[in-house]
Amino acid sequence: MFKPDCSTQSPGIDVALRVQVGWIDEVPRWRLGMILKYVICEESFRDKTAVTLCRTNLQAAIAKYAAIPVRFEEVSRNSPAHFRVVYMDQPLEGSSTTLARAFLPNNEAAEQRTLHVYGLAFSDKYIQTQISILAHEVGHILGLRHEFASWKEAEWSVTYGRPNNHSIMNYPPVHVTEQDIRELQSFYFDEMTALYGRPVRIYAPCESVYPRVNNLGSVMPLFAALSALIWPRSVPDVSKPHAYVEVP
Image (cartoon, rainbow, N blue to C red; front, side):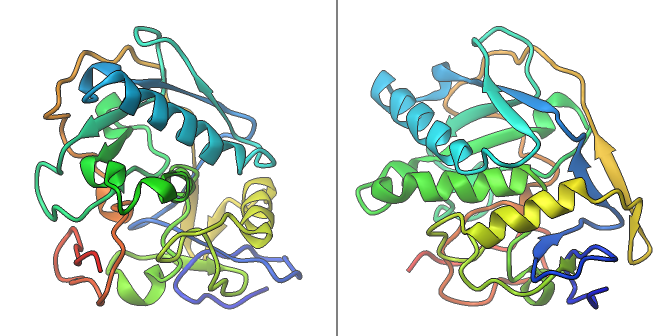
């Protein structure tokens, strides 16, 4: 059994695997085999071109996790879904250098499951890396914490396996690695009910029809602190509930 490195790990695993998981007092994940339905709130985007780009890049990001036993399916705008994708020019609060923001598995109110994509992700500087940006956020949605969460973030986490400096959950995110996939598969197939004294929570929220939003977006998700994708040049201020740093 691997020893905790303040990230997630599973008893009994004897291969070199690692994911960084856990949040406050639990280890959240989706029900095995679940299909996560999502809607893209097209009305929140600046134009159809941005909608098409985001849709295409999100599909490409999701495809990188095809081997994971949790699926994603886009549904039509007014169909019931488990989460939504919303565009905003900038976050309602915090840093204007945030690229995107997602959530961890949860069973809270529907608005707590929102993938926000911000205007900066469509800028000339980052548009070519938007697939990697979204792949990082999909990692959060599947339950992954930042690779550096154990030593840079205040919220509790535990390590599942060994470090992966090239993980998609590191900064800057580049590729979903084979190790990322092996770790995540192992995490979902493990039948553990607790991890280092923290319960493993299985979530399967009800579907909801999301109301219309505008360019101001919506209420910030409860678990947003973990999933603000910022390309840091310094260590975040972990004394605050949301850690923001400057884009280089």
